[in-house]
Length: 174
Image (cartoon, rainbow, N blue to C red):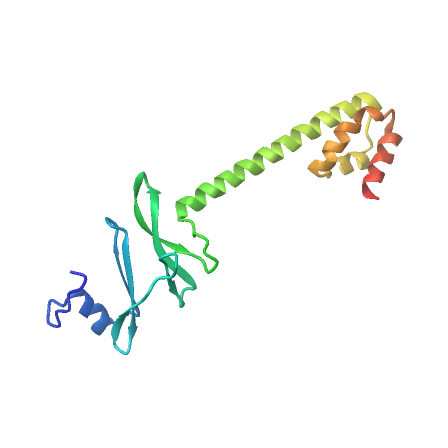
C-alpha cells in the first residue's frame, strides 16, 4: 500500500503524502528485510535518493543521517531505523542514554567512594604518626587529586611530625 497513487478517495498513501500534504521527505522501511528507501519532494513529486557508502541517507534539515541498524532493542533482535550524527556516530535511544548515564554514575560513585576510603585511611594513619593535624593541612589533604593521594599514601611513613607533612604538601604546590 505504500506505493498507492490512487488520486481519488480513499487516497493512496503515496498520493496523499506527495500531492495533498506535500511532505518533503518520504521514507519506506521494511523491518522484516531491513530495506530502506528515501524520497525527497522536488517540483511536486518524489525523487528517489541514493544512500551514502554506509547505506544511510543524509537529511540536511535535521543535520542527521537515517539508516538501518541490526541489533537488539527491548529484547527483540531485528532491523531498526536509527539516527547518526554528521560524524557518523550512532545516536543512542532514550533507554541507551539512561543506561549510559547509570553506568557513568556508578563509575563516578565508585571512584568517589574509593577516593573517600583512601582519604580516610590516610587521615587515620597520619593522625597515628603525627598526632593532631592542623585544619589548614587537613583541608589541603581533603582537596588532593587521586594521583596526589596515591603519592601521599606512599610517603606516609616519611612523616614524623606536622612540619614534615606541611613541607611535603608545599612541595606538591611547587
